[in-house]
Image 1 (spheres, one colour):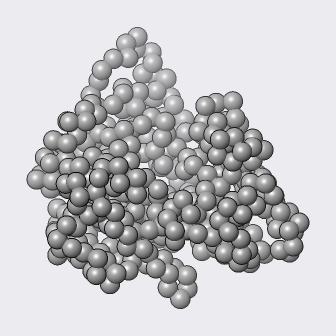
Image 2 (cartoon, rainbow, N blue to C red):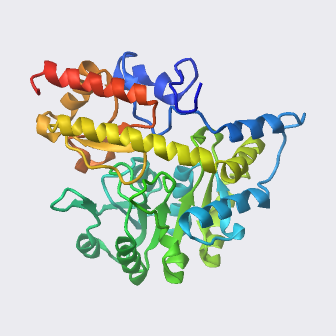
Image 3 (cartoon, rainbow, N blue to C red):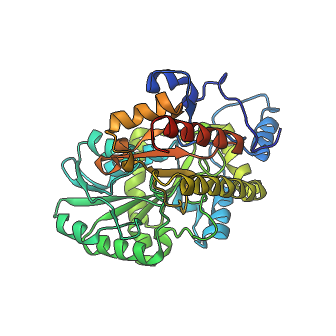
Length: 391
């Protein structure tokens, strides 16, 4: 079986399969919602874990300098950003890092800017840590491209505004922000004493016509004002290893973060995760290249399908393996739209409204699947549209 062929996960405890009944009320859906891939984790990762299991003790271990250096080398090659291993610290997940950073760099009652529509835990982490959520919605230009609304942001900044959560590349809209966009946003935050927490976990899933630019790499000033969240989970489909990193160039911010981190006591994670992490960044180059080729073909298939079915609006994602389908022309309410996808099309997608009110009328589809599965999903959607009079 090839690494991009269909892999049956239904007998595993995979979240997207075990939660079908709970989320969609039926087992009879193709689950294309949660952002992991139905694609085999790289063989180099699995081989490294198997090799480590030949040692008879799986005990406490720390992340080695070699593991951190592997990520530093990867970031330098792929993103032209020179980072030091001493800037890095372990985290079990990007969401955990966001919560830790919110507590490290703000106090209860302080304001945190979130640019909606966006990954739902952004909202949850702000609220659950008793900070005030301030929305700075993205806006669409005349071509339907999402942009930052800096004028709106300026109007909403107060002395209590301490943090901005950035999603780069953006989930769910698929934008890869340009250097100019990031610079303008970053400089505005610096001018107002706002620290940026930049979720860049999708940074390696970027298509050839675009380039991911780490915000902290743009200038020393922005580097000192940014906390970058990265990891191999999305890149190499290894989220189940629960390992990511926090990159902080500023020694002052790094110490503030680590004080909070020690209060939570993440520790250094699990030995098998350390091994998988290093193997992915050291040996995963060819696999990653092949993955991007596969995802590009799947993205093209969706684009061609949407040309043939213009009632579903589509902007080609510049990054991530998620497509933000504009279903507003169907003129359905959000519950009706969700039921249409589940009951008529047999598809379990993420409802746009879950990403914020700006997501009303949209559905997010994960296309990191075997091409045959994507083809089946699009055929099911075509048939559902025809049966319901949408041609």
